[in-house]
Image (cartoon, rainbow, N blue to C red; front, side, top):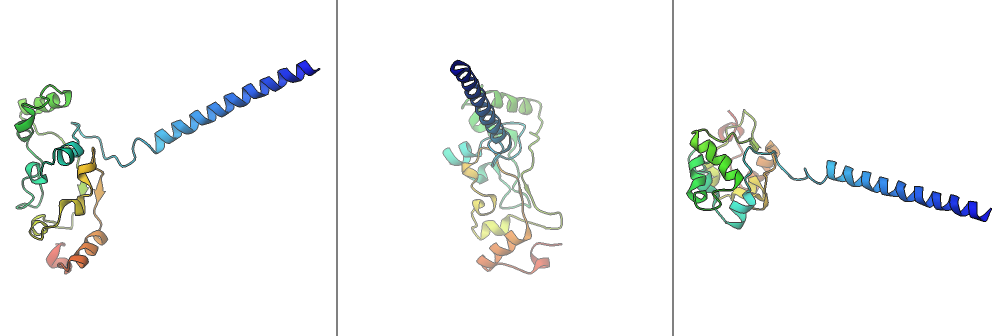
Length: 178
């Protein structure tokens, strides 16, 4: 009788161990599926580009790659040729650089996925913000620490709060809306 009770007890401990391991595995999988990988990551781009490496580690100024920020409605995306000012010599055989080189050779722009959005009825211009010496990070976030940029839909409250703090234009139709 004592021997049968030991067997039943061992089986119960064995099943309890397997149950706990299964629950732990399931919780780990749920964590990685729902929380970990996509947390603070923006959309996947056609070519992997790390702002953390370029703007953060290498400290390349935003204006080098986004040349129209001071004179156009849009900051602009760099032409593929601009990347090869450096990447002609720095890691030119990296798979992502080769993928970008294919765009250059075919004279095709890289189809980047848009990250920052303002509503259609807003006529936003970077120029007055540059003249006021507002840092890019104020609106675009901690770009130098991001590998993939997080999508941002700018809302009016964000802009109004900043304009109030800076004592900037608050007249809707003279400033932003058309």
